[in-house]
Length: 266
Image (cartoon, rainbow, N blue to C red):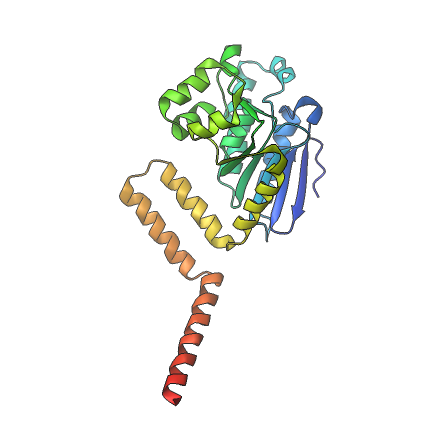
């Protein structure tokens, strides 16, 4: 396994587990963690046999955002690199990953932590999780796609409230009601329920999972309907010749021939 210091990386059959690992700092993102997250999500995209990436935080929280100790090291130019290069590369490595990326969120999911979760394909939260976008209170804005994804995922009036209030204590139920979470589970069944859903995803063929994610992402980009449907048709045509579907077609043809021979024999 990779020799990371701020990230845990584990392969478990069809599931890869990537965890932010600075529990004493509520998994706040420093420069080393950012570099390791980028490497981990780039690496896992090429892991054969893996269908789902379960993304979480070690300890009691998912991620409380950026490590404030990093800020004094930035100037006008390096902060743009942090936002426009490092951050963009990480969220793109998540969003465009060949695997289904599931965010398993508990404790705190604040600022940059929420931006990481929003880049995932699904977000499952414990009922005790607290959410927020706090950058505006510091006189800045989210820089890893937070403003953009809020506007695309929510009715604009709700997205504005989350961004402009700077609140850090939205509940999981509030975010679910707004439409920003996939599911919210009770604390005592959280791990079990998330594992059950991961097993459901893993029960599907890897090719169709990957292609389904890709088509949904392209549709999310705001393409005209005809263009989006053309992408969908191309994906189906490709999948029709995949190993899984070819096996099913062969089995169905053999069953049909067997039934026809039986009818002719009788």
